Image (tube, rainbow, N blue to C red; front, side, top):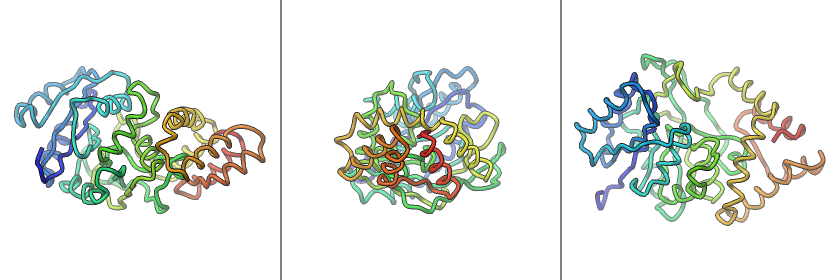
Length: 310
């Protein structure tokens, strides 16, 4: 690591990603911020992924690309395993999917946005994505969220894709309050929850810095479009979010002392609002100040709260 330039550990999770992996790796290599190491955790690929990785490691050197065996328990667990690995170090950490295309200044912009926070305060950068098709051709954008990032939002909604995110050491430490084997709904939502909950810096960039590839093998696709918003509303009202919130609440309860005083009260009101009679539930949710980023999202939030589905 350089004594003056922040070193970024890039956490790349792979699983049978041979088709698009070279383009992703090439876009990382082309970054204007050049002090980085790629840490790849492969979850048991059976295609040419490992052969591609070995070719790039030979080209870059073992000090710039490090290969790890993943836990073979899904993408979120794979990313959490990398956060917990003692052999992975960096002043900042960036999450990377295996099939996207990074703008050349992605790391530089992300670093510039949160470097002033230093390392004592948790800091997280994330933002919009440029949607690209199988061939890498742009065809749209992820939703633009206008309301400020906060714990009141994070309790009921993830803000940005992990493939856009950069975090500092303090944010990593907070994320690692969840054990490596914990049921984390998604690493990006967990990052937003713990950084905002601790009163850290959350920067949401309205200008995309990645091409987020949409194809048949996407584990989680884009949430853009009116139809996607209706599906999310149906998930919330149908109770799927309650199951997710069960996992989040259990993990957050184990790190209450890390939450700011205000957010500790907000968390307690959120928990209290998830059970009991209608009027006390509604009162606790109102006092918690919860909100989602869109009007239809907030309509679903109110309905789910009234139905006891949060």
